[in-house]
Length: 321
Image (cartoon, rainbow, N blue to C red):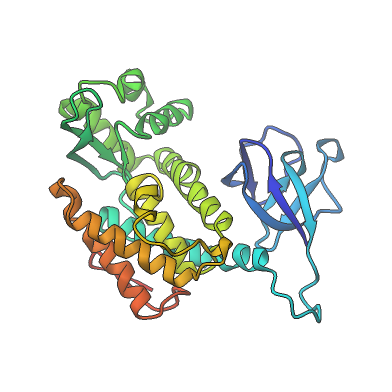
């Protein structure tokens, strides 16, 4: 197989090769610029005019015009004893592992392994950049995106996709992320909840948003920093969902190097989760203090040596196998 990297800003992942482009059918996900994977060039394509296509080991297809070959990978039955770390990192996060990672984070966010697409809460957790005071904002969806975060992008996508509640929500697009908050607007909030509960278009838009805005950036950070264990991916994805990133100020609270720089992966992850747990537990915002169940769960997985995530996990009271 060849090692490839995505060079476009984003690229559709497909279940089959289309005869023409654009073609919305068969799109199963989106990967971002910098995403690396292993794949073989497909010899027989429906329309040679579209150029090359590549197929990975999970039978996903990618358009060759948006990727570049990094290197050819050795065959799996090679006799060399050299460990190919990039291969290990790419293959360790299988579709089964990815699903479990998402289920755990969904349970952290909504109390459901599959996520609650219509869940809407109002938390006083947005810090006004002018007054430096906390204000209430709407938090919505499967893994909970915020009014002053990515909610506007979600609603824009939903409106463009002609969702069942698009007419109602389209009037709010330019108001999302602006003050005052829409948390007191019942028409807006009820339309969001109904769309999440009843409209498959909203569910797909949410899946796409959390893939593009959160999972792929987390996965890119995971690979570029040299991580390999599924539990590491869970820790990184949870932090990305909960805080938007791996905050650099937390990384400075311990001295372990990243794995890519020769550090011990298990030590780095354990130290990071401990630092995050202490920060949450002592935070001036009482809402953040209440979220230590997340870090507590992750520390339990490390203590139980569940680095491959093969053991059952109890996350926010939800059993995930």
